[in-house]
Amino acid sequence: MSTKLVATIHGIRTVGLWQKRITPHLARCGLIPYHIDYGRFGLLRFLLPWTREKQIEGVRSELRDLMQQVGARRLSVVAHSFGTYIAMEALRRENGNLRFDRIVLTGSILPNDFDWNSLVASDMVVAVRNQCATKDRVATLAKWASRWPFRWGTWLKAGASGRDGFSGETPNVLNEKIVGGHSEVHNPLEHAKWSRFLAYPRLSGNEEKQVGSKLQALRQDAARILSYNVDNVRVNFFGLEEGVLRPLAGLSDNMTYAPELTMEIRRGQGGTGTAYESGEVCVLSKTGATWSGNNLPTDELTKVHPALGWVISLPVESEGGGPPLGVVNVDGLGALPPVLQDENSEQFELTMVILKNIIDGSIQPDLQAAYWAKG
Image (cartoon, rainbow, N blue to C red):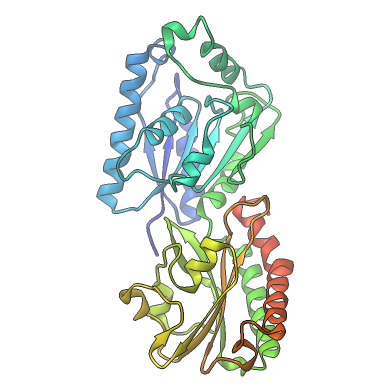
């Protein structure tokens, strides 16, 4: 299991007590917290461009050093107030290896029209949960401080996204509102939910049990639909974690070949990566020692079960048009089933539709709820 780092960044005029309170919730979800503490940062220092820039560059350097020392591909973030500004300014100007996975913003002072689409498209960010407070006066003041003539002295480009949410349509961004103020948005009762959001695609015990049981049912259904020996049919779920697709140990059925559970597949690679990248079902089969349409690196291909003969990769669609929630693979140990031998036949197309409908009707809602930790 890879290391999942979560950096927490506090705001101005505080020492970030919430950072300590959220720690056990992060740990319970298998996340490793790293609390950035730059001391009590006053309002005047925040408004002065040079002291503000110095703080952003200092945190940016600390985050990069952290990733290098731990060997992490990317990290997740929980930030409050000025911490939201620091985190996203550090990422926006990045030209190195700094990448964010999932982000929780509270009391955000980022502009309401912040360009999330560019960061998501360039794979700098995966998903954002923006916790808004309807009475956040600090976010309102940050927006006013960014307007002319105040901006002439501060050169600040901020906004009230912590009160009103982000504008525009970005499937990877969720605005959630509560009634309260700038500090009340950091309700300790929400910490467990945020931790589950940050941990995805790893699921909580109840979520894993629920999805796992439906994957078991899918294996039985797939064997009947394909007229295949159920003992030779397997199912597994690949989720995007730290920029690569990995099989989740608790989300598989009849997967007993240990090397396969360590696979790391990049987008566009093999059937799994192709299905994730395209959003379309992908079917691969093996003839002799050669896989159709395969472009997996050799070190990943050697992890595949020697008897594996075919794979159906089905992307799990996300509501709102975002990237897939992951990929469900139905595969088999042995020869390609007759129903899959002609991809142009009506029988083949009908089989894909039936399998996809099973996933959309049973597994997708649970994964969608887990993706945003709404369950």
